[in-house]
Length: 381
Image (tube, rainbow, N blue to C red; front, side, top):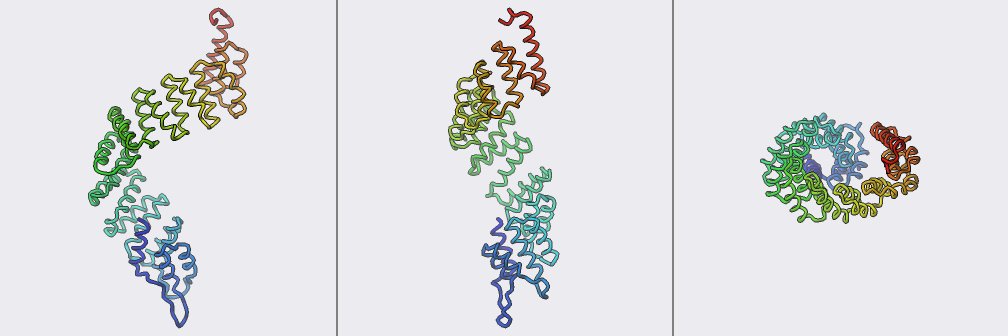
C-alpha cells in the first residue's frame, strides 16, 4: 500500500522534475527531493531536502514538510514523519492523502487514537483504499474497541466483496477475544470462499479446539495436515487437540513426525510420549535432543518416570558440569532417586538446599519416610 500511495500523493501535489533557472543556476531542491522520492531514492531525496534554505522567501512549506514526512516514513523515522506531516497540514497542505500517511506514522508509534482521528480527517478520499480500513480496524482493536474493529471489518468486507482479507482478520480477532465458536463458524465460511493459508487452518482448528469441538477440530486439522504436510503450526495444533481430547499417544505420534522436520520439537514429542506412558520411546527421542541443558533436565524426569533411579544418580556429575546444580527441581529428583535406592545418607545433601515452599514440603515428607524406615527397617525392605 505505501509505495502506491506515495506515488499518488506525489502526483497529486503536481511534483514534476525539478526546475533549473538558467539565469541564476539555482536548483529547486524541494522539487528535486520530490522527484527522487517518486523514483524510490529516499536517501538521495533526504540529501536534496537538507540543502533547502528555509530562510529564503517563497519556499512552499506545505510541500517541503510533506516530502520530509514521506522520506522519514520510508526510512521508518516515525516520530519525525508524524511531526512533518502535522507541520505540512499546519502549513496549508490540503491533499487528503496526507492524513492517511499521518495515520500510518501514528500507528507505528502506537498512538492509535490519533491514527483513527487522522483517518477521520482524510474523509471519503481514503474509503476506496482497502489498507486504510485494515489500519482503522487494527487501531481500534489495539485501543480495546473490539466491537468497533469488527464492525469496521464487516463494513469493509461489504465495500470490497472480493477481498477476503477482512473476513480473515475478523477470524483472528475473534480467536484473540476468546470467542472460539464464533471464530470457527466464520472461519469455515472463509475457508469455503477463499484460498486459505496454512496458518488460517491452524487458527481455525485452534478455535474449534478451544470451543471444545474436538471431533470437528480433529477432522479439520487432519485434513489440513494432508494439505500442508510439512507445516509446523498445523502439526502443533493437531497434537494439542489430540492431547486435550485425552489421546496423548496420538498427540505424541503427530509431534514426533513433525520433529523429524523440526528437531527443536523433540523435547515436546518426548514429553508427550511420557504422558502416554511410553517412557522408552520418550528416552529415545530425548537422546537426540541437541540442547544439552534441556536434554539433561528432561532426561532426569523421564528416568524417574521409568523408575531407573541408578541412572538418575549417575547424572549428578553431568548436571553439575552443565551448571544445573542450583536447579531445585533437579536436586529434589536426585534426592528422591537416592531415597528409592536406599542411600539415605546421600538424600540429605540435596534436601538441605531446597527453599521453595512446595519442594520444602516434599523434603519434609521424604525425611519422615526415611525416619520411619530407620525406626522400622523391615517396613522398607
